[in-house]
Length: 199
Image 1: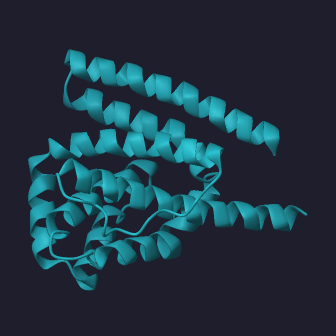
Image 2: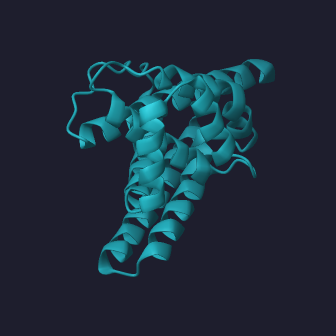
């Protein structure tokens, strides 16, 4: 029974990772004003899982907005989009995770890939989508699972995004983002509580 539950959670985190990556990529592509119909569709999930994907995708989107303001990151995305192949993808992910994996780095990677896909998608669906999904399965999924899965990421991602946002500016916009993130933490906590209660 316990082994079966563990296997279900592993499959859930894998599906969640795939849906989150695809959802975030579509958000970035649509933000750039490009039709995202050529990207693969996420797999159906339960309503609770969809709500959590929504929460985490929103936090990734806000982190992406902070990445947008980083000129160095934008230059890196431009350069990567011009030469994207499996070798440069491997170099990118090695650079992102060279000193360890964190929720913030995972979210940043999703943002960078989304921005890259938006730059090169007008020609065709880039190979970078399957590369990213394979990288999640092969390199990040065990780390995600060891931290309690995506369900437990919400508060960590909110803290990362809030710290990144408030660290870059102390404007009223940053303060309102902080209020939104705290609301997200509360909603995420409620969803996690409901999922654990139902298990």
